[in-house]
Length: 86
Image 1 (cartoon, helix red, strand yellow):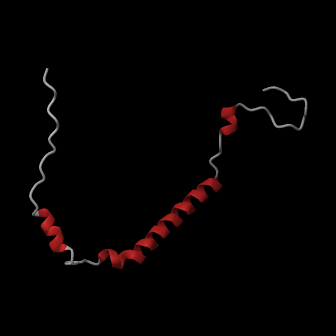
Image 2 (image 1 turned 90 degrees about the vertical axis):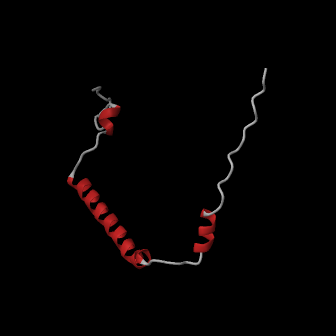
Image 3 (image 1 turned 90 degrees about the horizontal axis):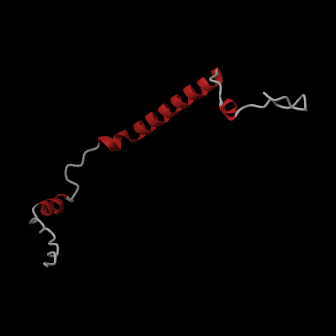
């Protein structure tokens, strides 16, 4: 570590050492609280939308049109041009 000419200056640190963080109690609580809030938000959103998600539509009026599409004849494969003969 090099000595600075200013006694109150910050010590010289390598880039790796300067990027190191501490795992403290504050970081832990921020993580725990944010996970709990995210879980609560997702639960509330699910509870809010649960009636629409559980509703079933046996016949929504599109059934005959969809059924006709399944009974259509199969489409023909695309024919590629014959390679030129030599």
